[in-house]
Image (cartoon, rainbow, N blue to C red; front, side):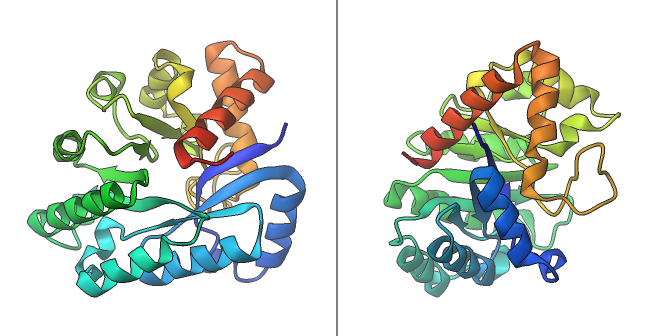
Length: 252
């Protein structure tokens, strides 16, 4: 059974020197990856990759730090891009009160607009939330018909109980960090039926490669850590999380 990465950024400049070699490694060792957009250019590139490589799917949307670029024209372009059958979600969208590139009101409006777009297109969403859990949860509850992935879930098991049941939790390299007690506790207590595996490549590189560039193949270390925490066979963790990824992204 091969691995799946539900969240990576292969268009990042850190892959410029060896991107084709990376794609070959992915093709040989993985079932598929989802390349995540964060603005118009990256969304278009994600679709281009999905057309070129059978093992790449595209997620399109505007990250909260790019939300000032979102407009009626941009939304129409996303609608056109979403006509491609390999576009599997709208994302990554949400709120980021850490960087605060735009005021909260601007972020919230852009987030809601993209949630409405996902609902209209009948697509799941990929959620980004940093230092904004309360507002994020309130907005998710406004859209009960929308499902998705809570990317790199930053909260506690207690706050996870307030996340709508139609969302999966993205777990990545942070789980392997020595200071990740909250994430370890969360993974220990949350049902594995709600977990999907991600890397956020080239960021958040897992142990034992911290300090180096992350890449999709490193999902292996996340799966192994989950297996250790939950006292399950690696193959069982891989089977369940792969099924979860295919279910949320609608991939047969």
